[in-house]
Image (cartoon, rainbow, N blue to C red; front, side):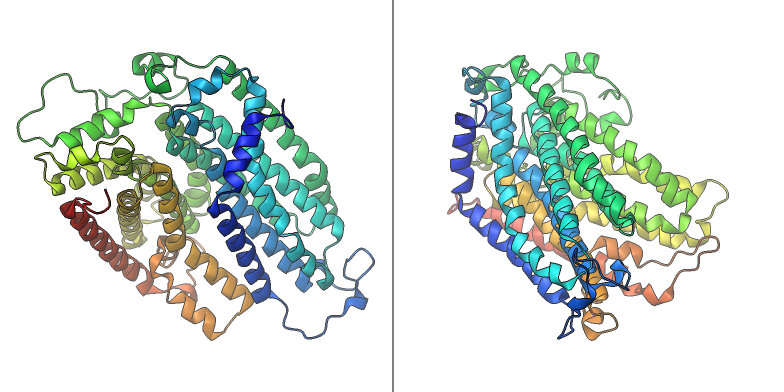
Amino acid sequence: MYIFENPVLQRELLVNLRMRRAFVLLFLYVGLLALVVLVRWPAQTQLDLAATGPDGAHIGQAAQDVPGVELVNLFFLGQYILMALMAPSFSAGAIAGEKERKTYEMLLASPMQPKAIVLGKLLASLTHLAVLVFSSLPIVMLCLPLGGMSLWEVLATYVAMAASVVTFGMISLAASSYFTRTVASLLVSYMIILPLCLIGVFFYQAFAAAAVFRLTMLFFLFPAGCAVVCYLLLKSTSQRLMHPPDVGADAKEVVDVDQEQRKAVGMIIRSDQFPDRLFAPPKRTDLLPDGANPVYDKEMRSELFSQGTLMLRLVIQVSMFLALPLMGVFLYVWAYLAPWYISYVLLFNMLVAPVFAAGSIANERERQTLELLLTTVISPWQILWAKIYSSLRVSCVLTSFVTWPLLLAWAIPPWPYVPWTMTMISYLGIIVVSALTTTMLAMFCSVIFRRTTVAMISAYLVIIVLYAAPIAVRTFAEVSFPDSGVTHTIRKLLFTSPFAAAFSRPLSVGDHVHDLTTWYPWTCLSYLGFSLLLDLGLLWIMIRLFTWRWRVAQ
């Protein structure tokens, strides 16, 4: 009933593994890993395999200096980050998708035990990831003859990676049980999983020299900790399915905002007080004034509270919990590392902005109200302006919660950032333009795609390609081809990344002097110009689509 005769597992496996995107994703995943190994393969035509011991450890040379160690570490870290990014996309909609498809109530009424339902959803969502992980085994086996890493280290790394993937899937599944929309569970999952992923990467790199300690942690202690976390989350999720909240019409949970506020633990959102009313204004109790935009009023006052405030409260609390230590380290202890805190703010906006913009138009299609909206007397520009402004306003207010420490660090004694006021202003400009660009990209995906989840995942993919991919390619080129023309050419393509723009600004605080060899003054200006042109282009395309009213695409 739990595994072999689990109808939920059987149905999910048949649906997921037969989809075309499963084969496309497998091809792209293995091809990307193979390309990394091929490009980073040592240039020596002959390898001194006789200098390695029976366990693969290199004799007479530090393990870190062996070509195979660096290649395998790069392979594992890249695969680990990809798994952390993909796990929520498979698990976050497992239960929330049932609610959106209006089949959640029938699933609860089935004779299956809650643990069997949760276990079936978990195994089904992780099967595809397991196929991806094991398909990379032949590639990593090609790297072992290079020496420097034993078979036991590879096995321990795979065990730890499998435990991490299961934990990430269980976290996403637990978040899916608490929300009625997939986009909300995706956001909360990423807010929890990405910091855990960064901790795992830091641990793997920090203890690279202590091979025995890292082997013990990866093989025994780390999987045991993941097993405990998965068991607790499995038990909690099963209890929630055993005693679900009240279910109303269309199999949707009944959300009473006032009751939710009274039972809320931690931060409480009060719509009648500042600054909460900036992004969560109170419900309207009077008539709409003449000349007001009804689309904007509806977006601001109804959408945020239609699913409760749990997602907003979790996002704010988790982001502030992470911002406090990062603020202390990057803005006060080592003040010259301020660009790293800017990177955290940018990453937070990358996660938050698509949630409020990717469903603006796609939700209208899903509710079958887009055609009615287009036939009203409201002009296309009013509709589009209201959708963009309401989404941008919420994401900007949430991003400002983690941006104010930057202004605080500039204003309080001993004023280490006052001589670099222009750099601080440029940081704020990068954050503002990035917030606008992420919202516009997510809105454009919402216009193009018919489903909110597809629009949101597509927006995340486009944002990662524009913002993070240039940094990853540059880092890979600097390690693989130092002081070559390839590296200098790639540096000219960093104008799409706000992270590169933040690190390109000069900042010398205390005894630290900014290295002018890494300063590319045109990177920031080129990013701002490129982003503004991109936003204008996307806005023009969306206006044309609204004007044409999708006569063919309807």
